[in-house]
Amino acid sequence: MVLSAAFVGAAAALPAVAGPGESSAVAGVLGSWSGYGLAMLGGALIAAELVLPTLGVLGFGGFVLLAAGLLLVFDGPAVTAGLTGPVLAGLAAVLAVYALLAAVVARRAYRHRVVTGDRALVGSEGTVITWTDRAGEVRIHGEVWQARAHGSLAPGSLAPGRTVRIVARHGLTLRVAPAPDPLAQGDPP
Image 1 (cartoon, helix red, strand yellow):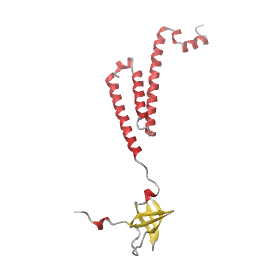
Image 2 (cartoon, helix red, strand yellow):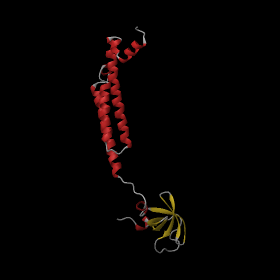
Image 3 (cartoon, rainbow, N blue to C red):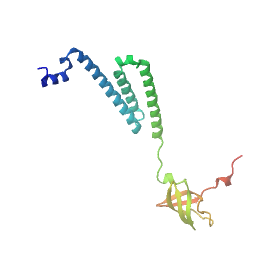
């Protein structure tokens, strides 16, 4: 009867069936597994904070779960092996500082808006690649654009290599004007 399938199943499901010593050992393992689960869930929330703009909410929750999980895992004989309260408190403090810094960085990134379209082009500077009379090609932000002169220009004022400032955009053609030469303006005294 001891080797029957029902006994093996009962011993696996109910540890006290096999003997009183195993039940306390399994209970300690189950307590550790819940701690591992909480710690892994806390780590997952902290990792999600790096990707999602929750401004520290997931990071703080992950920190709390991670600290609770570590307290459950290391509550027992492992504490006498060198993982004492001050060590766990130090680890919790380091993780709290990390979560706080992640929240600050996320908040700064959330405030910084990306500028695209005409607002990104108008006012920026580029370099003339080719120019003939009143039209040519300019390189701006690594892209080559068709360009036309804005206003009247002296012949040869937009030679290749010259810096231009974007004044407007009409479709896929930019209106450009010569950028002021910083050396010609001089430094204020």
